[in-house]
Length: 385
Image 1: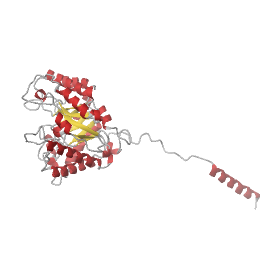
Image 2: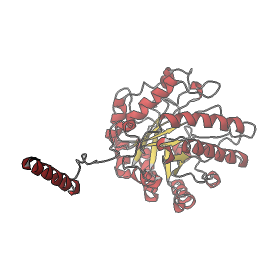
Image 3: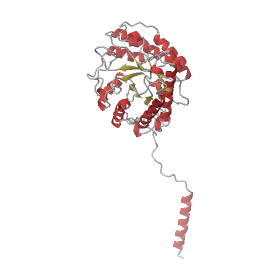
Image 4: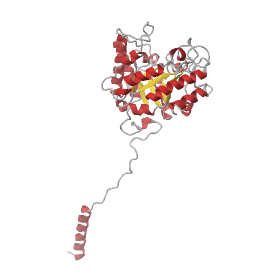
């Protein structure tokens, strides 16, 4: 064999042996900055703003400053069409409206929704209505707000023994669909199972009975169980459960049972205090601090916060009786008591400003301004915004 050929073969063997023993690193992909970034559309990620694990309910509530309700809008009862959003006199909700709410300092938006007129006999949600609800939810999410989505003026469930089986079937089916629609949203979206479950038209409507309170607890169990089993981010999502009538009365708060193994749970309470000033349209226009807000906060601390269960006042406010200074003092006292206890609050805004009835309007949804800018400013200051 030619000596040159022999040398070439030997060199080739040595080169192959050398390369086989040398640790040459393979090309590496670019480092991943974040598994779950926080784009405007949470459905593009399927995760939390903070990674795989959601913040706890207590951590989320700790980030809430002051909330705003989109009242008398998607919760209005009409004919079961998309026009129901305007059935009680409000204009169609726009992204610009919610932008103004965020710009004012609110970082929580509660979206009350009545679903009953948009269900068929098997509790299937009309797809156009669900799409519209999602659009409005996205207005808040795109503003990096916490959004609370609920079931509101539902006239098809009633907490009495004769109705309970069908109620639970309907609530389960309803929340099965809502949970599926929003399962990939991050922790900024919270679900609230029911609004003010009560014996409508009964003499015990707002006070309740032992049987009715227990049935409301069963509503909560069905809501939580359905959402937790639905997949996606719903296993960790913060869920709001409600005492009978969402009542701030001590007896109703005491009767609320948190479902077993419920995960991230928040208690939702409504409080228009003092009642004769804040909610009773035939009551007084003069505010006097009667201590009712402090009593409520003491109950909340003892019954829930001391047990590690956070609370949100999902509705509060006072009716306009051409008494802005009194309303300011009422709001300041209430928010101070709530802030000292660690309870964020959401103003009920139904855009009602003139006339009779429950005039809770703050945002002029037609003109774009705020009806009571001084009241708004003082609330923001008190809430620490």
